[in-house]
Amino acid sequence: MLTLSAKIRKILGKKVKTLRKQGVIPAVLYGPKTKNLSLEINLKEFEKVYKEAGESSLITLAIAKGEDEAKASSSSDEFGEPKAKTIVLIHDVKKDPLTDQFLHVDFYQPSLKEETEAKVPLVFEGEPPAIKELGGTLVKSISEVEIKALPQNLPHEIKVEISSLKTFEDEILVKDLKVPEGVKILRKPEEIIASVLPPEKVEEELEKPVEEKVEEVEKVGEKEKKEEEEEKEEEKRSEK
Image (tube, rainbow, N blue to C red):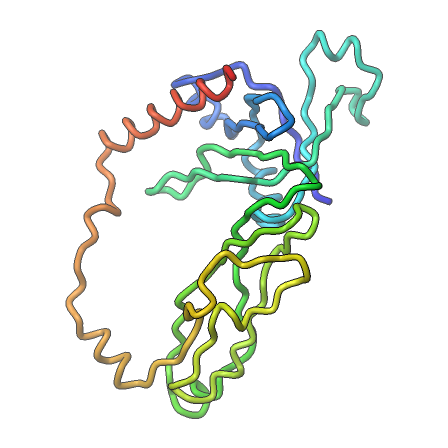
């Protein structure tokens, strides 16, 4: 199981921007049987762990204790720094819409005896004959699915074999996905995951006028306001 180091965070609100400049991400830990904790984690370390674990693999969060707790604790790591270890899921990640940089992370400590929900990426494997032999183009309608299972049974990814797409009429549906026993997919069974478009259909799609999505371009003022609201919300959660 992957391990990520964290520290108790005393900097809250707007001041967390100073942490980000130092390569540190603000985070929060919560769960049904744990008190909310404001944390800080190293950006580079988190990027490595997130790349491997995603949001559906359990990881160990090693939290450095405060000075008072450290004196009363007998457990330490190899550097002599007391740690409190807990098993968590990376539950929610906020990114800057312009730079794609990590801004904030939520860690959720689940009960290992109760089912929890998580989003799992789909990994497409194989080569459709409809592409190789008929010159079609693969269309991936869904790239991830939300599932429900005991935390320890959550898969890191779900593989999709697309070599079954032999004609332009063939489709892979949600109900065709193969998941481990005890895992439920929280999407409609008849939703299309992948299909292959014939060449003429692709040309038609390319000829359609592209509509600019204004909502995807955030104004600086709106972006700062959104960050401010999120920071206030975080302060409220930390006080609980």
